[in-house]
Image (tube, rainbow, N blue to C red):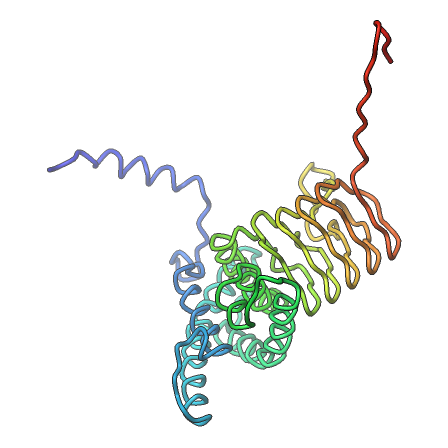
Length: 304
């Protein structure tokens, strides 16, 4: 079957022209990082961090396992380097900065990222332990690692956050959105999250870019740590980068459906109840719940 598509192709070309293209000094349109390639990078990084659980490695000796990790990590870093080069070139054109050696800068970024992986793994172990200790249905830490959406989301986030801090925000955001699409948990890569972090169930959780979360914090499904309002500049455009999301101190528990907005502080050890709407700071040790509904019966025409 043949369709008449010539006019449609031309219309699509004109429509694409409404989105400005970034062109390098050689006149070629600059490539953006590839989400598909970054998903492959994530697979190799996950296999490097958890070779038997995520990589399927079955090497009987430590030497064999190290070889497997080195192979998958090398693949991940080579592929990541190519994507960082793309992002650096695109960002330079976007900001009209002077040309620079993108490949050399990308090598530095990827090396610094790689050197953070052992520390990232240590923190992830604390997250896995927190999920196992905090969920009576969990039968093992292996089950937690392989099947809990909160753990998948935090693995992605800790990798994305490291890259975000290394000035590759597009790649970091692609990693975050990969986790979001798989789990329903939306964590901006800019958010700072302490150790032993546990998201139970997880669907609908939203954590904004400038949120700061302490150690041993537990969130349940549909929790929002968001912004209350957005500042505008003189032209009416949004002012980006300002702190506008909550600070959650150590050992806080936030139950399902709670919404906390603005640059407020939830003090250490507080408990925020389900479906609470909170736009003010609370001191350490607070227990915040919904107002109690009251029922009244009026007889003989009486009323309020």
